[in-house]
Length: 485
Length: 117
Image (cartoon, rainbow over all chains, first blue to last red):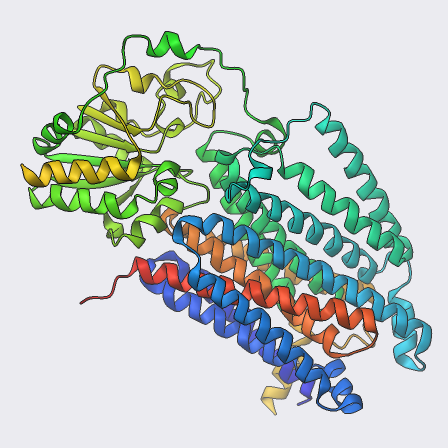
């Protein structure tokens, strides 16, 4: 059996391990093993790559140097990545995923760049069959040229798109305001046309100049497309960029004719696309609406009309009394919980309530937070068993039998006007029906609107008590008050 | 003997030696792999529950770092200065992606399964 066959067998093993890894993500217990199998597959693929013919030939020519260089850079990258992953706070998970996505996209683009320069050099200076082969790959419209162009385009868009998403999620001051240039659609269109023309150039000539210009144009496009997108739409952006990073890897696989890249890349591409679709459905919005629309920002209903004279603010003692009498409490966390880092405080509150015999459950909206499943991770960090975290469709029918619903840092996902007001910008979005609970406690710093910029009639409802405070402090005070009773 | 026969079928899935194969067939072979893997992906991933969507995102993120394989091969061949430089940078970035993704996913999943004390 040739050494190439062994290498291919290793790639095949890695591909199978990736599929099993995804398969085992279906339950929290098997998922740990799934992730380890995925890592094992990656290790096998990386080892196999070191035995590829070009690397072996280069070791024959230069001695141990190529391996040393590769080992050094791989170890440095691995070290940086692992350290980052160990220290990063759980509340900042969306940022970290965005950043890693960007690195992956950049790597695929760089692989294409490296292949292009190397192949061009071989075609010009080498002799014999490798020269002929390299020259043939550079012909117009070969698979090589097309894949190089696509890897360059997708990789560059992923890089800058992810960096902008990172900046927004990290709330860097430069990204505080969404970029709302009135001409942005024209700018994007111009950039897209330029990208297509340059892509054509790469396809038909494999010129480095076109490649480099494409990097610049695609990178700008990645930024201008992501800049106008607001915070609550970030779950969609994260999923989409995740998908892109996979597709960029698959394109790189077409460049170097390697099936493990194609398989792993398309698995990730599929995963990102599915999550994107789920997120859009959970907001009742189309993908184009999220990417190009921005929400109808002019609120049709004035906040004063909704809130005037109807807001009931409550004090800690009063709320503690309400909670003490409750048999069933449902907690609805939102992004505000992550911002206030209140996941442990929530846990303590449910501990004292449960000690009194109250049933406590959590209602998780699919787009609560800044990435898919964000709330589940935060609550898991606070050791809240996942059996208590219930999905929207599952928990909605139980709100009428719920004594108290506590909304912490969520707004648009509990806004009843999505159900009742067809003219509302969020009309038709599936929401958590907290307003049907006996009493609703809303923990919020002020009456400021959520991402959609619209007032929330829930705050003015007869059965709602507003608790104006920072989420974490509010929960700690409440817990103390109940514990004393 | 039999294993050799079996392995003759392997190029269908993953040959890197393309000498002798015409470029259009190479493309169609890879496209076949791409579409089938997409299909498998859709089937498998729709079964992942909502509560595991964050680990799914970060785990698949790590797997998208597979581009490190391409980076290693092109950087390790030391063909040209620029090619090697780009390749090594790609190795660095892809390894950050791979290690960061797997480690953070593991950390998250550990939290989903608190150790029995």
